[in-house]
Every structure is written in structure tokens, then in C-alpha cells.
Image (cartoon, rainbow, N blue to C red; front, side):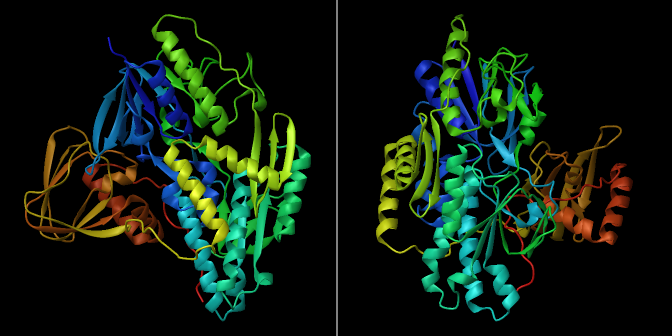
Length: 552
């Protein structure tokens, strides 16, 4: 019987697991599900943010990289290991679809959670996705544009102060590239002097790049400081506003740019899976098989992978790096193939070959096979390594050409924006159109402006169908405030209809800000559905641009 192998996630772990499984099991049916249809090479995101590489050249279509693997662009909802199905939302209507499997590979990585520090999620930029990098570049250029024209000294100071939280690999590379973008752009802004620019790194640990030897960390700090970057060590972040970053020691930094490279956390989908967890990550044995399962495997950042028997200390587990994810993928493919043929499985065993970091301005640090390198040679090695590591010949060529052009031409200050869909929008329907149906993913709160719709939903107590006509001034879809992922009712237009759609986060924020509105819905939910109104504290999603304070 043909084995059906389902892979969740298209990052380093998922991509390389799919490729290795295709090689090991040529007759198996392999499918990969990912929210995007491309693979993003995350180590290059700081260079995308700085404009050294154009955004499309840092990504490669998954279908191009995965010959013989079915790729499905969809949002994963949940996993039922007892029935061996994964429920996803796909297509324009976000219809729920069940996808079965014989072997499941979970490679969903981690997300960013900044909720522990008040205001940080609302005002900080992150560096996880391609869109994050594009947004950071547009944001930095906007701050330079603003500083060049403002006549308010305090506003100019805020605009020209750039803060990066975290001095690990991502933080150091981000601040280095951001500083280079600023330095190479200042000649286009005659009203901004180099001395007015302030770039800071905030790190809770006592030194930068704690993953590397202390001597390389000292070199990195010295090079960053030489370029005018201030490093604040041994201090954390307390909170943030649109114009301030408040540190744990009480220091207030006036700034309109906060970049958070901290806050890695398991995704909600991973946490909700009926699998053994440790610190939010999936517990696996040394063979990369999930504890208590025979047909579910996990690797990459979302997995807790022991490197030796009886592992307990943090260093006893595989680090969440691309280098390890690629080797994990190879071992996972071998073990799945062995499992299907009744052979013995082999434990994952790998020793890091080293680590590299770019500091910007053609400087870097590296530890490779026990050798320490710094300066220009380390920077060259960093670039050579990542070009070799890039999947796809075309991507390698494009990145190399980008680097050549960046070396011989000025850095572009063109500000390109990719606008997110508005939180509030009008949508028109013709008579008979289905607006949404029961079971589809909840996408917003609807208010009828013109026309009329019919809503059908099951009674809360009896389960019997209830039909309701909704006319101008009335609303539907409010059950999503309970956190329901799926629609409980079906709605279609009775007439040509115009509705106002408000997404969930925007709706909750407005209800939280206006007691009258909140009071109305408390009574409405109780009277209509006999359901108590929840009192969540709405948080801004990371896909939205951070807000700033006063303008001037």
C-alpha cells in the first residue's frame, strides 16, 4: 500500500524533510502544507531589511524546490492523531478540509510572543518573516524622511533613535545591517547629520552573541561600538509606547523604532496538539518520534530533541538552528523509511560544525571546526556559507548578483509599502450570494448597511435550526468574540446587500475602548444566545504595522 506522508510547515525543517523523504521513499505520496507557497531563507532577512537584497530574491517557490511533492497553501487548524487527520482552512472561503495521513511530520517552527512586556507587541517590529523585513526597511526610510522635514527637536530625536532588542545572532545581524542602511542613506537627507542618529542594542545577558566564544563576542561588540552603535547589557525591557522604550532599570529611551528579535514561542497549533509537550515544544525521542506515538514525528524549532539519553539541561537538547534542522531532516527521513520497512531506527546524533554572524560593513565573526575568525575573512566566509546553503541554483545566482550590485551602486531609498487589508471594509453581495457557511473560518464581524441577509444557526440549547432576517443597522458574526475559529451558522444575501466587515482584533479593541458598546454586546449575547460575553484583553497581531505616537 502506498504510504501517505504529511508534512506541516515549510521552513528549513519541513522543506528539507520533504526533500529527504522524496529521495528515501520514491513511491510514497508526500504532501507539505504551509501558510505561504514559498520558502524564505531567514538568515538573509536582515539584508532584505537593509536593501542589500531585494525581497523576491530571498525566497524560492516551494513547488520549484520540491519536485514530486504536493504543496498545499493552507492554514492549519488542528490535528486529530486518533483519526489520523489534519484539519486545515484553505481557499478564498476558508473552508475546513480534512487531510488524512499515514505518517505525520510536524515542523511548524515557532512564533513571536511579546505579550509579557506591555506595549511591546503593539509598537515593536519583528524579524521573522519576509514581510517583517520589508516593513522594517520601509519604516527606517520613513523615519529618515520624517527627521529631514520636522521642525520639532523632540520629534526628530525620536525619529532618529533606533532600538533593537536582543543581541543574539538575529539581533546583531539586524542592527548591523540597519546601521549600514542608515549610514549609506544619510547623504540623501541634508537636514540629518550623522551625529543626530542614535542606534542602540538592548540585551539582558552580560554580553552579545552568547552562543559564540567570549573573545568573538567582545570583537563583535567592539566593531558595533566603533560604528556608533550603543550596546546596553544586563538590562531588560519593561514596556513600550509609541515614543518610548522603558527598560527594566527605569531608563526611558525616546524612540519611534523598536525592533524585537526576542520572544520566540511555540505556535498555538503546536500547543493545542494532543502530543506530549515540554516548555511548549513537542517532546520527541532521540529517533525524532513523538512520545507515545508510532506514526507522528517532529523536528526543527517546535520539537524538544534530546541529544543524549536522560537529557535534562538546556544544552542536552538540539538548538533551534537551520544547521541542525537540515541534519534532523536527514535522520528523520532515514528513520521513517526504516520504520516502514521494519528496520531498527537510529538516534539523532550531530555535533555543530560552528556558527557565523555578519556585523554589517563587511565585518563578521565565525567559529568553524574549532577555528575562530573575525573581520573581513569571517564576513566573506559568512556569505560563502549561506550562498552554498541556499536551496535552488537560481536563488544562489540572484543573491550573488544582488550583492555585486550593492557593492558597486548606492543603496536605494525607494520606500515601497505592501498594505495589509483594512481592518474595516465594505463588501457588496448580490441577492442569493452566500456570505459564509457553517464550519468555515471566522473572519470578522458584519453589520448590514443596505439590503438584507438571512442567518441560520443552531439553537444553543436544543440544537434546532433558528432562522433570522438581518436588516440595515443589525449585525451578525458576533460569536467570533468567543474565540471560535469556525462559523456556527450560515448566511446568504436575500437582496443586493452592502455590509461593513470588521476583523476580530479591531472589533475587540473598539469594544474594549467603549464601555457603552461592550455593555450592549454583553446584553445582546446573553439575550440572543444565552452566552456570557468574554472579557479578553485584545492584542495587536504581528501582521499589523506598529503604531507610533504624536506626529510633527
